[in-house]
Image 1 (cartoon, protein in one colour):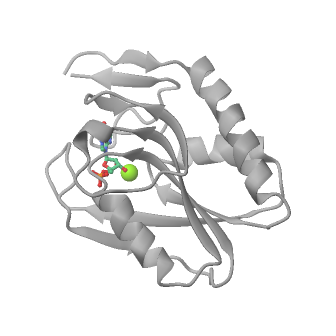
Image 2: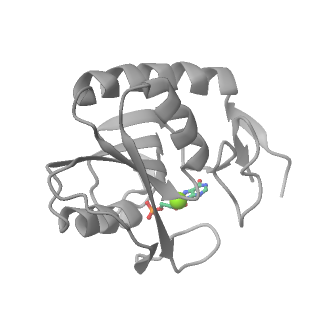
Length: 171
Ligand code: IMP
Ligand code: MG
């Protein structure tokens, strides 16, 4: 394992979050949306994004686990922290750190859709389209990343590196 190398700097992340927030604010202002953080990877992004949004909204958390090897999700997904409040008839925006094969989000969006929200959209900090196995519509996207393993800014490798302020690549 080599030292992490910066792929996307904290300054670029900040700029992109400002852009995303502007778009999201335009679409959700006055709708009192429920913004759902998918734990744990999106926590840092989520915290920055909701403060940049600066509109009335509510926050919720879900945690999903996928059983697979260290760096790949298996497709066998389980919601390990369920949603604890009703989202029926609410405008829901899901916040995720990375869409890779698409297994996790495809499962999670189906789980949430069954709860009959008024609308359901996805905001992902990063997308690795080269690895997609299941189609997922990303409504708001921060960065497209190459087929490399990324860490930092909340994103982990075996629970390490989440604290790094930049998005980095490890080999
Ligand atoms: P998917 O189900 O394959 O789309 O995987 C999504 C999840 O896999 C993400 O939420 C991450 O937890 C993890 N993941 C995928 N690629 C990476 C990566 O490059 N670094 C860290 N975690 C990753
Ligand atoms: Mg994740």
